[in-house]
Image (cartoon, one colour):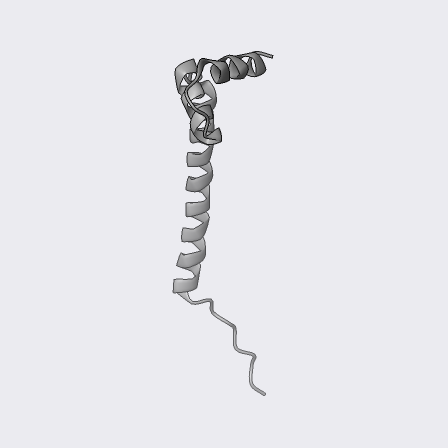
Length: 75
């Protein structure tokens, strides 16, 4: 009788699996670093937030809109 032949995993497959694992670990570390950096940085200045709000909602640059935004965001 013939002995059953052992299956050998190709080296390229092992290298690919190990490489993907390393890339996942590096990606998680980078993502954690970005999140920690964003959370520890100072908030954007008020003028930038107002400009972003106006652009997002397509509002004119009138003082009434700014006052309304300031009243809503200060709560």
